[in-house]
Structures are given as structure tokens and as C-alpha cells.
Image (cartoon, rainbow, N blue to C red; front, side):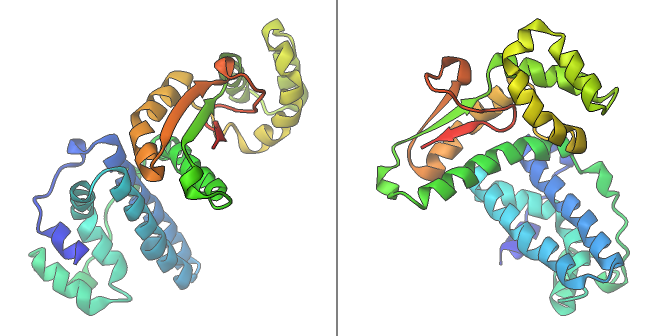
Length: 262
């Protein structure tokens, strides 16, 4: 019924969508990419876990993050491609929807021709992952507490010095992945002296995986401020966003991974 309601709406162009709506489009095509990878490896069950159950979680999150109508608009945008993916397991239903989309050619005879890379925005997905992780972090902590006791969530962002450190590391990592070279370059900067213990522990993982959490201070601040009301609504409590520089306790917040206090 949700899908049927979505295809009855006027179709929008991708340029008409907001960043959070483009996030859901990106999640769909990222999962589509995984879907075909699993199919190529004959991992059929995993293909449909990805495109059905995991994408349903994305839909539910998006609806909470925005509203029902906006989620319908995104579903309308991806409807035709979604039907193509679901046809092998629910062909009759997909053919019915295909007729409602006024496509003359049977859906089972149509190829998947969309260039997924056109709609996948890794930076958008990475930024939204910060908010998803905050929600998951609070939810895990909340399970051990009485929900009525949850009055305030404090989101403690990294210090200015640590943002500068990550920006510095990001530039070096584009040139080399040698531990000693990177460590010596950071050590040669006097302002990072207080961060050297952190660097020694954090750097090995970074060399292997890259700076997966790195985000500029102004972008993270804007993202958190824009989603503050959503987080407050999600947990029915007040949210405070505080920099480590202004927090009176020692916390280990890093860019893209704020410390959460509930």
C-alpha cells in the first residue's frame, strides 16, 4: 500500500530533492550495487536481505528524519528500478505495479540500465552515518536506563586542535601510508604535542583503513545543528551540542565520532 501510494504521486527530478532525500536515493543505489554483487556470487538470499529488509530500515529512518510525504516522493523516484530488482521473487505483484506505471513492456523483460554511480553520494552517506551512530549509541545506552530518566543528551564534538590534527593527517595520508613518516611529520608540529599519545594509538588503524570518520568542523557543526530537533524528537528530551574545548571533563571525541553523554 505504501508503494502503491508512492507511484500515484507526480515524479520529481533528482535536482528537486533535499540532501536528506538524496541520501535515501543514494542508499538505494548503494544497496543495488551490493545486490548485483551478491547475485553475481549466487548469494541470492543476501541480495534480497540487502534490497528488501535493510532498505526497509533506510525507509523507516528516512520517514522519521523527514516525513511520510517526502519518503513517498523518493520511493516514487526509484519505483521503476525497485520493481526490476523485486521481479525475480514477486513477479506477479511487480507486473501489476508495472502496469500502473503505464509501462508497455513487461517488467520481467526489462533490463536494469540505470547508472548507479550517478546517484551514489558517499560523502552524503558518510555524513548521515554520524547521526545514525548517535541514534544507535543513545538507544544502546537508553536500554540500560529508565526512559523517563532521560532528560538531556549531550553531544560532545572534537576539540579545534583535533580537527586541525585530522586535517593535517588527511593531507599526509594522500602522499604516504608509512607510519614513521606520518608520525614524524605530526611530531614536528609543536601544536600537536599534546595529541601525540592519541596519534600513536590511532595512527595504525588510520594507515590501514584511512580517515573513515574525518569531517571538517564547520560541516559537522552544521549537520548536528540541523538534526538537533530530530534527535530531540526521537528521544523526547533536550539535546546539547558542546565542543570538547568547552566541556569540563576529559572525553575522547574525534571528528565524525562525537562523544555522547546521557
